[in-house]
Length: 477
Image (cartoon, rainbow, N blue to C red; front, side, top):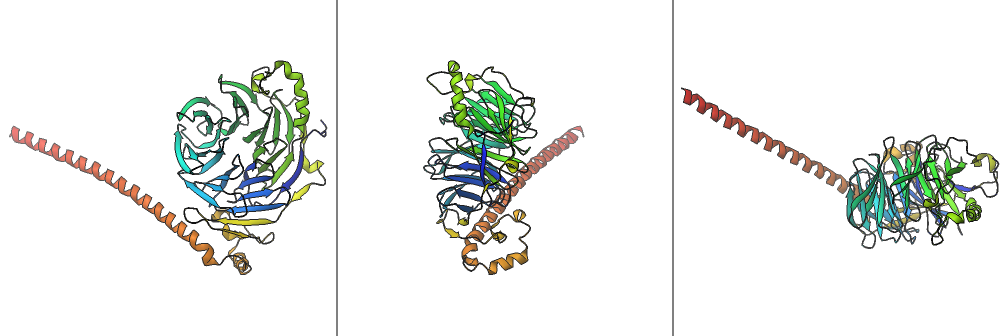
């Protein structure tokens, strides 16, 4: 089927990350895009009026998730370094660090009012934080394997989470209890989220499926089988009528939820697509994946579809916008590929694509446990990336050999001196190392104490048995 002016269009792509993109998130005003990557960095892309990007340096391992607060004054990030960071999204980039999880953190999510933050981790827990006081509130424990994602409902009263234990759980934030449970015998969900009015949840499955559940009647409403590999992420259009999915098969798919069918297949990425998100007004959406590129798309189709909704007025409630209860029939929708869909491959169709490689400003942020220090700098040209800022040696690019590093440091007279830049990080790393060693020693002593107690108990039993035997022998003689 040929494309038309109402079809999605790839507007531009951004280059700046050195490794796979794990998460994308629009600012509430739609003028900025935040991205997270395996390269340990966060990047903030400004669309207008001045094309410019900030790279935030602070995490020590893969950054797994990023999200703007509802007011746009904060940026939250999660990382495999077991921390959560809150950043001020400007050129100073001050950050504060939260440490409570004991394993990599997989996702962050603000409540709609911006007062709470939910974090999901491989330590099998979901933790909730107070943003006003920036302190830990409580944990939710019921999952028996890594928790991959946790999201607030639009009204903030519920949290949905998914885990590699093959369950999706609904939590009540008031009594901190698990109030609902959806299980899957085939695969697990990589990502879950509520639809805009909070009546349904959608899950992106490792078994290549997308499922939509009505949480009021606990029924599966729709079941899409449109991808050829695991589904990594999904995002609801603000209207609630469309869902976009990102998959390891290298495609994005757009589903019309009112009609229950696939309407678009987008093929802009090379390799797996890990993340996708609509902007707040639905006019744009962005995607990222293993090819290190961030693609920015214009939606277009939502205006046309809104006109088509007039045909469905007879089955809608007049006091509320269309939602998934209006789907007919209310049964799973497996797709066999016969449905007419539009395939869009920008690499073939777009000639004058706007490529954005804006100047990048690196922001170095230190922990706010002490006074937060930030240093802004203009980076070298492409190929002169300062690889020393990679705190995880395994993530260094091949060009970062010791010889090239030496050459690069000679050309960095405008950067802070080695002593100014490294001492705070060195002290922090040393203290963390000492704390880890003390923790290991404490655990070792505890184990030794337990073994000593067991040995003493066994020795006592042996002595008592010996005494009994000796007494019995004496009595017989």
